[in-house]
Length: 432
Ligand code: KG4
Ligand code: ZN
Image (cartoon, rainbow, N blue to C red):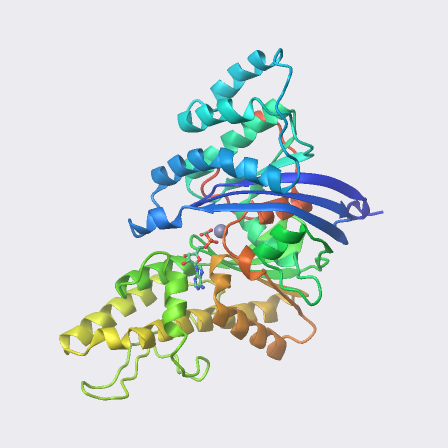
């Protein structure tokens, strides 16, 4: 009997603080790894995005401070949603011994320590089997808050701890599929704590992961076995969306803003040529043709490069201004062309990789996978070009950072580790 046939049953509480979302989820897993069932009790995300928007991007130390403020209320909310209502302790005898160690663990997180002492020490340990925590990749100061919080909880409640790679979370979120006839949304989970089967992973799986910090094509050979077959050489796709949006005068995060702006503009993405240079029509031409490059579209490898695309937007705007063309009017068309350029490169590279590696399943995940146009074009391209390949999309509300995806990654690949040995790895890579 292979390892994955063992019947498993576990309740996982996961903590995610790799960037600007403070997130905690609680889920029960049962069945085997090949035929898992999951009951989602809580999936709480507290976003700091409005705060960072003022600075045009995530400020690591500000993120650290906000995580410290948010973790305790987010945990209490998750426990309440899960019906694990924290009961106040009556016995205080053993607590003094634990407090010393917790003060040591949270010595660099003074705001969190205060809240922890006030609100967490007094409650009884909830019925949780394992605590999972994101250890990387991400922003070092932000990651440490989550990891130290997880260590303090593991110590206080006597629970095992599992370190999780954030990118694994983006992969396994795609296996959580909507029950028939219903849309899997945040509200749906909150209102019904649903229990459902998950799609059984079939390997090899090819995952296109597109987020603010990463753009990777990952071959998943088995649970926890990865090979990165392509990645960005410079900016990630999400980062490029954010930078291009800034050039267009749009707020952070730029991805959804560009998508919104591009929505009303109609011309076909795949029909457009892929020139190396920007071309656009002469001044006063009512049909100004805005064309941006598709970087590395025809390179023989599966790597990406997006920083040139952002620079192309910069030059285009500069040239239009020089010619006294009303740039504001053209912003939707530029947004649309920019989005099309990113999508075309992502899809064509993924199809080329699929031809070479012949996966049985294709996955799209990460923050940029929220992009409706990308979701649609990607699905159409897979259905048309890769017969017999199962196509799995992360449910839209799980594309951005969340902790439910960390429970999923912990279930499929988690290994308990002595918490003294757990540390953050800002540049953690899959397959290493
Ligand atoms: O995975 P994620 O939430 O955080 C990281 O792990 O980086 O990804 C965030 C990124 C941001 O760059 C954001 O602009 C982008 O995902 N994003 C989008 C959309 N929604 C979020 N990009 C394009 N279209 C969207 N609709
Ligand atoms: Zn992410």
